[in-house]
Image (tube, rainbow over all chains, first blue to last red; front, side, top):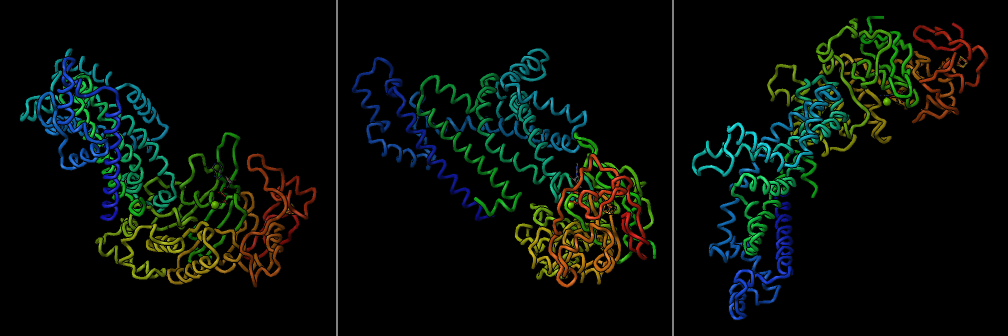
Length: 314
Length: 322
Ligand SMILES: Nc1ncnc2c1ncn2[C@@H]1O[C@H](COP(=O)(O)OP(=O)(O)O)[C@@H](O)[C@H]1O
Ligand code: SF4
Ligand SMILES: [Mg+2]
């Protein structure tokens, strides 16, 4: 297991480096000089040159990339020229909010989706299975920003049960939790459907496998069979899906963050793209990339923990 | 004869399919006496697996028992509730399946799986592990206690079949059902597994219902043999009856394909020209008529009666005499 972890983390580092290099080159081949954006239309060529030097843009491209990578490795994402604060500080401040939101959404989606999927598989083709199926497909089909808008209108504006916008007073846990409910609901709802469908499908497959038939032939209790013998195998595709899904979640977090005016990395990327704040865009994107790679690494490692055969692969 | 462990009478099983009703088993009568080994032979698709899934009542969703009785230790299993059935499975009856590669749960250690099937015994986990380890060693896996922490993929196919046999015997069943346990293995492994089973059977004194389409395995291991064809048990008797005095033309053609059958038995069922009849649209009369060398008009009109050829020996053909 330790060996697997080492290999997997090594792979993750390589992926991050490649991704960062690609991102860096992408931003720099996009037409438009960041210096003219930052300094405005009345900047003189001298001023631009000065800023280029400050940003290190006068050096050869390869040197720039390597020095950027070196800085990233040390946690230095450069300076934001608008606010004159380190990019890392701004990004990480927003990151907490996004992570809490994403984790809350995933957690409730899993807590509901996995049992629903198991239930559907065990009682396949019954009326309640079909009901779960219709519900799942329904919530998958509705985009999360629609859920966000409607739940906002209904629970916050009409019923006034929950706060509409913001992330709550920092330090006041209950207030923060109340602010979390609607966005997490909006983001997680579609995932409940996804997870339920996926768990149902893989559970049905596993329940048909020979070793399950054999476990039944030994008279093992049905709950042991479903939750210990089958679920441990049936959950594997879901874990993989969630690993890559975190990336998509972060992007759907953008919607929720904009609708609910929540601070967060999604809103940060959105705002800085709008204002052409390249160092901030770069920093935020690098951090989300790392996050994405991290989450797939974690999900792969969980898979390896659950399935001994995976440990010997890679 | 003392009361049989398993007594199947007039069993009929159908599968409901979009194309029609598949009459997979028709009027099967078969007994398994205590501490004896009964073999079932027949070409693939003749209903062997259907028979045993009806016995342990783990049938496909589209299967249904149309008629007949299955008695286990004198009790009618048809009357059993789901939980009573669960009580019998894995305690009084245990199973060894065909494919050892998929028979064990791949994400649980074999120790866990061997401990779990002892869930009815009020022993400590440690005791259960020790029992499991001893059983592993008994089936030829040395260093049992430490092998308990291995996963199935760390064992070869032959080893895995030894493990499933160990598990089946761990619960000390009255009846062991083995559905082609050696078909997926190569010839050397097959011989080893059969020797092992024979050995264990002498030790544990359980009855075995052994399914195979290898004639040599049947001849080596069994006391009694049933020959199945297209959903019917066409002949049954002791090993000597079947191999030395076969009555039914189907049994005879199975054996005739290799004259040295007793001394050096064939590994596989020999192929007999012709096709197995459709189980949806059954022919009138004898089920074997299309492939039988002795077929007469009467065979196409009336189904043959079961003719008693000896104490335990019966065969269903018009041209046999008591
Ligand atoms: N679930 C099922 N639905 C329909 N037909 C089936 C099903 N299972 C088995 N059969 C049919 O029943 C017959 C007996 O199959 P089986 O008992 O598996 O034979 P064997 O084990 O002797 O090879 C075959 O003709 C097979 O096609
Ligand atoms: S009854 Fe007729 S067709 Fe059937 S096995 Fe006997 S001889 Fe052959
Ligand atoms: Mg079979």
